[in-house]
Image (tube, rainbow, N blue to C red; front, side, top):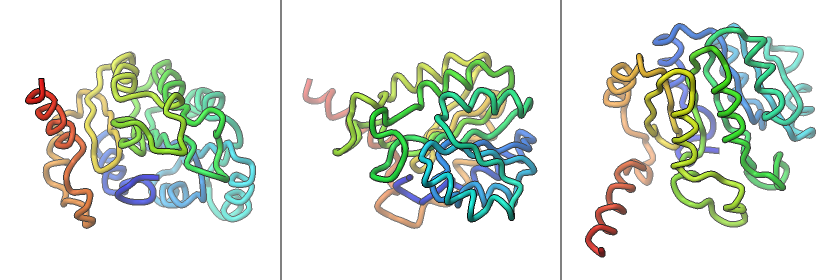
Length: 221
């Protein structure tokens, strides 16, 4: 659950769809299925994976008969690989399966992100990877999260560098965005041209916060 908006940045997803000619949207962490339902209006192929049985059943009951979405129940670390193989094409991956409180999947293993990135790195396709809740990787997640279950920014970056294709990554709002390096200039242009979030509390970007922290540490040293 992002700090700037609930769900995926829609303009970013639509930009990626057009820039990379992508037809498939794959989500880990269905929750209430708002993102999957929105994506189904813009992509011919949408798959969403949910580990929490109650959330999966609710989403399937509410939308399973009325949308073309493929709802899957299980651990994203086990299901993402077969899903990518079945898609057999580039996809937008919205990775949001990490634990976010009571009633959601994973309180004993809160963040499956590194394993999900391992799966994406084994895929022969070039995917656009969107990782929600960037703030929880840039800094230790707050209580009641167990910080030991969460990778830090360097671990996430290392995984993104291990893919079979070179990538370019930035943080947009509260989302880590990794695209094929061929799309670097296009992503830079997109980020520079999009309006700032309406919530002024979050207008100071995470990279700027990191820079201020680094400069402060340097002065103290």
